[in-house]
Length: 101
Image (cartoon, rainbow, N blue to C red; front, side, top):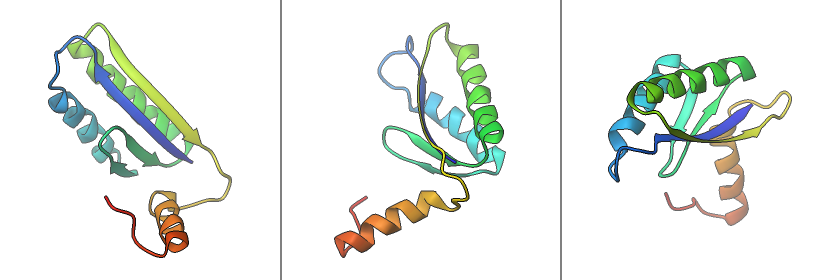
């Protein structure tokens, strides 16, 4: 499955990249395939693996803040693998060029 999530504390002002970096350290340490984007992070893995990582990120954010914003989107497709790169490659083929970014 492919999961996209955004997480950050809501009471720490405008500059939140340090908190996002903390979440990415957790994602990276999980060993799951992931891709950081400008507004969210995509992780690929099995349900329990992915949601365990997101819970760990949430627990870390709660150590810094009493209020944490989380948005989660799930694409649960049986048998699909390497979708983080595969979905982008599929669009690029149809575009006839690499998308910017």
